[in-house]
Length: 338
Image 1 (cartoon, rainbow, N blue to C red):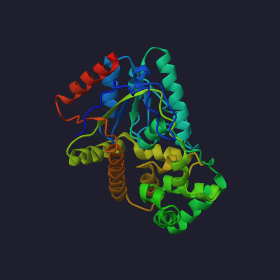
Image 2: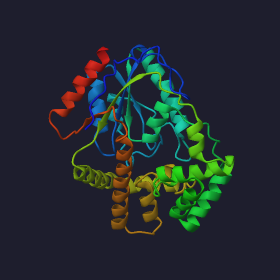
Image 3: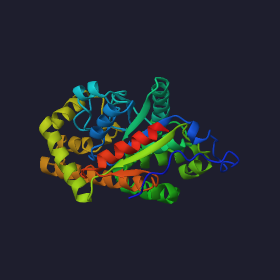
Image 4: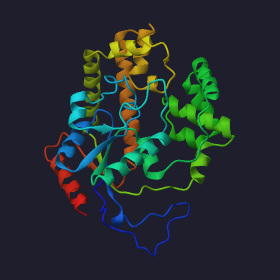
């Protein structure tokens, strides 16, 4: 596993930044932040709470599902007692009928980080939405705003033909974006097609031309990932079955009963909710719903790990190793002393 890069190594002030990069002060002069990343069901929340009790850190959630109110069981949202013990920013900030983009997250996270830093504390960003981490670290291209009419046209076509067919269409129009987007990721497929429809340009081209904005913090990156993969798979299955015991289906029934939600909304596309919605529509039985939800969650974890392997300067942590957590604590203590 990759080790931790020395965060104290400040760049030579005589060096010029690469073209298209916004220059930042040397790292030694930037305030600290910690990124606690990992696949779903890896134990990030438990570690984040432990770190908050040991260090002057405040937690910011980096999870596209936890932003939604009323979606508690299926998102494995920390319970009220845990949130009183260790408050998390950017939880319960949107209604499930609303959208929340990576650009929204970046703006909100930067504001929260600034507030935490102003209090003399350190932002601890934890979650598994890798697009949000990238948006925060590198910035985002200036893409056209979402258009409800265009989105409805794309969703209607998906209902007729399936998302696989739309992914094939994206591959023909924007091969680079299609290569990065999994065929089972309808939200990102929809957005890439929407950008083409609204701008007449490929999203990959717009990303390439956008200057990297950088992040005005020096960051310690930690990845939480149980080993071997079979351990993570077992945790995913165990967690979903526990969600069912906690009343997950009743939670989805309550969301459906509102009357203003449907399964094509970003909130209802979250893993587990989509399968539960299909089950309550009578399309699949309970056993098949469980199977599909567990498989979809494992596929999500696989995509998350693909992103995480690009974090070459991250410290990897296996929560199953007795000495690993103490090693992480030692590394954070050293990092915060700089």
